[in-house]
Image (spheres, rainbow, N blue to C red):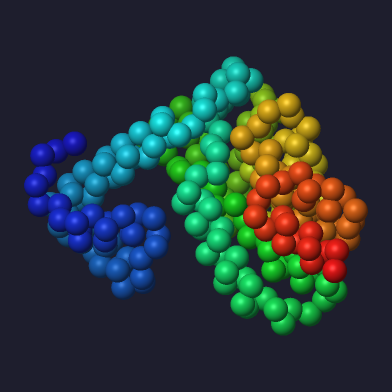
Length: 243
């Protein structure tokens, strides 16, 4: 990282928004123009990328468990599973608040309404594209976080061949299938996770498995799996199903 002392807080926040695609169209256009025409700005962006990757890497080291042995042995991925982190809970809560207000008037049966009311895809894991050994996994995660679920599934499935019981891969492939409205396929992957003795994703897998069964009108299995989840909305869904 260069010794660039001209990075202000405002500039840092601006570049971070653009890198994360959270900026406005005008900001993104300004960002691209400056990248092309301002060499000092390009250096600043490189420094900020290095800084952000460093923060994310340190966060992973502090908060994540060691990755499961079967995935470490697989030659194509060397990544780690992640527990629900605060920013993921915040992201889910924000989406659900919007859903509660906007989906009330959806047509369809009551199960469809409940599903639409409470379903939002898992926000996904932080992407650390600087680690080339993890490229395949994180490359697919970028697709997933951009809503390109089919692309993500296509990239993750070959990795699953080397680690068929890996909870991280099964959870996110199941999540992508569910977001893609392939509920029955999603159920297969979520059940792999819930049947494992231990998994960082087990609690959330039960939640989304319950939603998948709800979407397929299998109310009894929906209730059963939601009962095993401590995700806050599990209780709310069970209350609505029992009323």
